[in-house]
Amino acid sequence: MAHEITAPHYGFLIDASLCIDCRTCMVSCSVENNVSMDTTRIWIEETGVTGTFPDLKRYTVPYHCMHCVDPSCASACTVGALHRNEEGIVTYDKDICIGCRYCMYACPFEVPNYEWEATLPLVVKCDMCAARLDEGQQPACATTCPTGAIRFGLYEDMLAEAHRMINENPGKYVNHVYGEEENGGTATLYISPVPFEELGFPIAGTSSPAYSNRLVTEGTPLVAGAMLVGLSGAYLTIKHLKEEAAAERREAEHAHAGEDHE
Ligand code: SF4
Ligand code: SF4
Ligand code: SF4
Image (cartoon, rainbow, N blue to C red; front, top):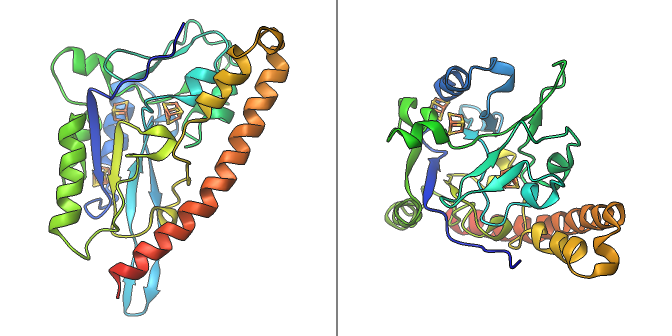
C-alpha cells in the first residue's frame, strides 16, 4: 500500500523569545495526562547563560513531539503502536506497544521517553491532547502558557504567522522556521532569537528517515522478510542522515546568525 503523506491539519507555533521558564506548560501536561512531572510529554530546552557580564542572557523553550508528516517513530514500530491520524496527529496506543523502544532510536528529535521506573513501562509521547481537541478545546500546554509562547491552530495559519513574525521583526528572530522542513516537515513549528542549535535542538535533515526505512522494510521481498537486517539498516541510515544534516544545518544557522548581528 502506498504511504500517504499529507500536510498537517493542526499546528503549534512556539516562540522562544516569549518563554519565561515558568513551567506552567509542564504542570498542565502532567495534570491533563495524569502523570508525574518526571514523565510529562513536554519539557524545557535552554541555552544556558550566554553573553558577557552585565549583558547576560538565557533563553528557554518548551519541547515536545514534532508530529512529523512522515514520522520515523511510526515507521520503525513493528506492531503499529504509533500512528499518524487523518488530522496529522501522531498517536500512541499503549495496548499494542510491546516495549521494544525502536521508536526511541528512530526519532530524529529524540522525543519518545520511556517509563524506566514503572513495573510495566510505556513509551511517553505528546498526542496533541487529542481528547481535548475532540471536545473542541486547545491542548493544555497552549491554553495555560501565560505569555503566549505556545500557540495552537490550523497548521497553515501557524506557518504563515511564523513567517510574518520573522519578516516583520527584523533582527529579532533567526531567519528559520524550525519544523517547516526538518525531517520532511512537522506540525510543531518554532521561531527563535538564537540559532536552534544553541537551544539544544537536534539538527534534523530535510527528509525523513522513515522514507529510507520503508525502502528497507517494504522495498523488496528479500529484505522484507529480514526484519532485523532491515531495522539495522534503518538505524544506520538514520545515524548517517543525522550526522550529514547536522553539519549542513550548523553551517546555515551560523550564517543566518552572522547576518542578523551585522
Ligand atoms: S508555560 Fe509558556 S512561558 Fe511558561 S515555560 Fe511553558 S512555554 Fe515557557
Ligand atoms: S518527533 Fe519523533 S516521536 Fe514525534 S512524530 Fe516525529 S518521529 Fe515520531
Ligand atoms: S499538547 Fe497536551 S500532551 Fe502534548 S505537550 Fe501539550 S499538554 Fe502535553
